[in-house]
Every structure is written in structure tokens, then in C-alpha cells.
Image (tube, rainbow, N blue to C red; front, side, top):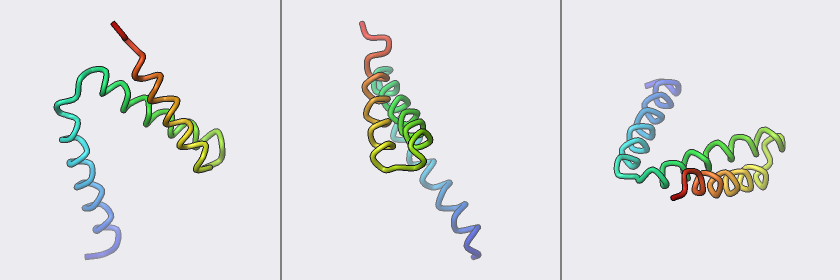
Length: 71
């Protein structure tokens, strides 16, 4: 098996496991996870891939996502 096929197979496995973990999430949990992911990407882009920027963006995005649609 070539390296590219191993990477594709590994990525597919991680994606399937990740999606199955979200099946019982509440709307608030899902919003928190989406916010953290989006914030992490935005923080990484804005700080040119800085680890602190990525983590900071994920934290801020997770908090914002958690507070969206709060009853």
C-alpha cells in the first residue's frame, strides 16, 4: 500500500469515528464543537499558524458557539 492510500484510508477512518461521536450531541454541544473548530481555523489563519493563536481561537469560538441560541 502506497503512502497516499494509507493517508486516505486513515483519514476516512478518523472521519467515520469523529462523525459517530457526534450522534448523541445536544444542539448546544454541537454548536460548541462547531464554534471551536471554526475559531481554531480562524485563529490559525490570522496568526500564520501559531499554536497559541489556534488554541485561543478555538477557545473563543467554543465559548461563542456555546452561548448561541441560549434559552
